[in-house]
Image (tube, rainbow, N blue to C red; front, side):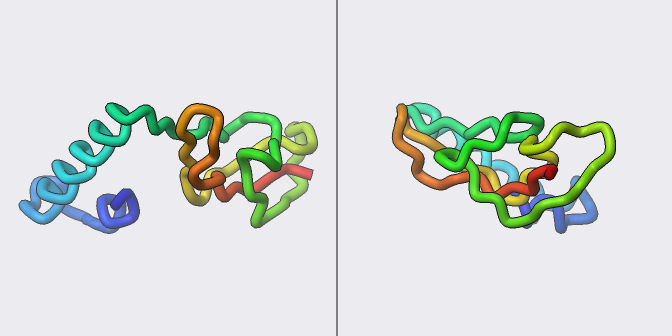
Length: 90
């Protein structure tokens, strides 16, 4: 749904507003059941929470830091429902 929202050029369009409404309702429902987004950006890479799909040497950034989130991850309590797909500095 986030990709659909990003693809919409006109934020005043009824399609955008409809997708945004459904997305917010989905987030609220997941939060009620305790599903949380995994914070990944600027965090130390953790193979239990993150799936590294890209690596890049970046000056001024220490190794094994998440520099980009390609797909959000989610967890329920301590159980990972979906790992975050990330780009990691090396």
